[in-house]
Every structure is written in C-alpha cells, then in structure tokens.
Image (cartoon, rainbow, N blue to C red):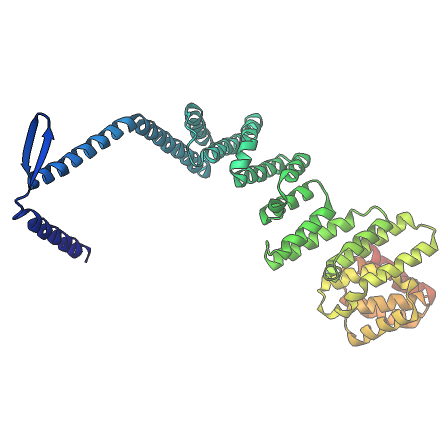
Length: 428
C-alpha cells in the first residue's frame, strides 16, 4: 500500500512539472552591470534546484569529514567495549565450568582493557569493572588465594560502584559473607552482613547466609529466629523447615546451663514447637540433668521444677496414642522421676490412660512404678509383671526387674528377688 501511494505521488509531481514547464515561455533576466543575462524560466528553475542539491551535498560531506575523528574514537571505544564484554563472559563461563585459573586470567584481561581505556561514555562501565573484579575474587577464593580475593573484593565495593550499580555491591557483599562462612570466620561474616542495606538484609539469600553464620557462631537463638523467618517466607519445604526449626530448638535446650536459662528458652519457643514430642522430651531430660546439679538438696526447687516438667509434658499425654514406640519409651523414662511428685489428679489420669490402653507396656510400667511409690505392692507387682514382657527399651527393662526384685524382697521371696536381680544385671 505504501508503494502505491509513492507511485501516485510521483505521478502527481510529474504532471505538475509538465504543466509548469511544458508550455512555459517565461524568461528570467539577470542584471550584472554592464551585462545582462536572459535565460528561460525552466533553465533557471532547474539550475536553482541543482545548485541547492550541490550545496547540500557539499555541506554534508564537510560535516562527515569533520566527524571522522569522533567516529573513529567511537569505533575504537565500541571495539574495546566488545572486547571487555567478551573477556567478562569468558571469565563467567570458565568460572561456571570450574576452570578457575582461566577464569582469573580472563577477568584480568578485562580489567587491563578497562584500565587502558580512557572512554567514560560506556553505559555500564562501572558494572562491568565490578563484575570483572568479583569474578577474579571468586576464582581467587576457589584457589585459596585470600589476599588476592580480598583485594579484588575491595575494588568491587568502591563507593562509585555502589552508586552506579547498587545491586552489584549487594551481590559482592553476599559473596563476601559466603566466603567468610566457608572460611569459618563468623565475625567477618557478621561484619559483611551488617554492611548490607536494610532491604537486601531481608532477602531470602541473605537470611540463608545469616542462618549459616548464626549456626557457625553457635548463636542458637538467632539461628532459631532466622529459621522461623525463612520458614514463614517458604524458603524451605514444610518438612525441611520443621526439621531445621526442631533441630535448632533442641540445640537451644541442650545449651541451657541452668534451670532459669532453660525456662527462658522454653518460653521463647512457639506453641507449635512446644508440642513437638522430641522438643518436649529434650526439655524434660535437660531439666532433670540440671536439677541434679542446681537443685540438689533443695526440695522446694525440685518440686517447682517437677511441676514445670509435668506442664511441659502435658501435650504428649493428649497425643499419646499417636506417639511412636521409641517416643513412648522415652516419655516413660523422663516422666518416671515425676511420679513421687504426682498428685491425685495426675495419678488418676495415668490410671485412666492405662485403662484406655491396657496392653501398652509403657503405661503399665508407669502405673506400676506409681503404685510402688505408694506402697501398693500387689498392684505394682501385677502391672510391672505385665510390662516386662512388652518392653523393648533396655533401660526400662532393667528398671522393671529392679522394681520386681524389691517387691520380692518386701514379701520375703528371696529366690524370686535373686532371679530378678540376676535378670537386671544381665541387661547391664
């Protein structure tokens, strides 16, 4: 369609020229004293057009000649820029391929080209230079050349680079944190994390590194808080997030040095974390270990700690049927020291659970030990005798035989007591 319009336009121009100059007998007189020139109007018109075209072509040619040095400089700058981009791409490709020496050489070539160029009109000169430094630093880190790595890193973190390309500076800081973690230097890693802008510090990649730094520096509380934040942002799968948070909670409980610190750690856990069987059992285990150290001889503190432990284990009784056999055995072990502090309501609940699952050996064991504490010898002997056949945990089996031996001694059956002590000794 455009060609048709051009053709129509040319035809109209031809018709107009034909009408103008076809029968035009006009003349143009030029006076240049003492001369006079008479020319036809058509000749004057074509001469005027030709003169305009000639002047225009001459001016354009002069402009092109004057721009030749600028064009030459632009061409050299373009060739230099292409060479630098090529070297940077080579460095990146070799870095990904694990050819760190070649990657370092390519990055150095790019930097040499950049330093040899005086052109500042490249659109991303600072970003290219920072990327070349960062690739050289990454290769130096892989080659265990920390001095050269730190030199290139400082060059990539110059203020003018951060101003021209904030993303490049943030990426360099994140890489520096990762290098410090791999060097097992938590202080350097924390220092680099502190240099990140507030927005960059909340990104998932930064939080992942923060979690690694916290675990490396054994800052369990910080690691736990960071893991919760990552789980909230779905940085892990639900199963992985639950496993990481559970592991960190267990570490925090194991790191408690006294009962007060243990209570603070427990209060800092979320409600869902407290309901995890492994976490509640670990807290009870640690409480018993610390109570033997901190509360020895202090009956009031022992009773208070026992009440806390029973409160911590409360959710496990509500989900007792869903617990695995190993968790049930561990629950029986950690709850046994609480039997002497158990009140009437707690004893009634334990008996109710035992009636609800009458064949469960762990509940039989706990109910038998509770009866033993209250000197209900006959019922204790019955329950413990039933439990010994179903228990698979060695510790609980040994404790069961010991309890049966004491019961046999109470009723004066020396033969049965000796056999029970023998069975307990064989389990040691």
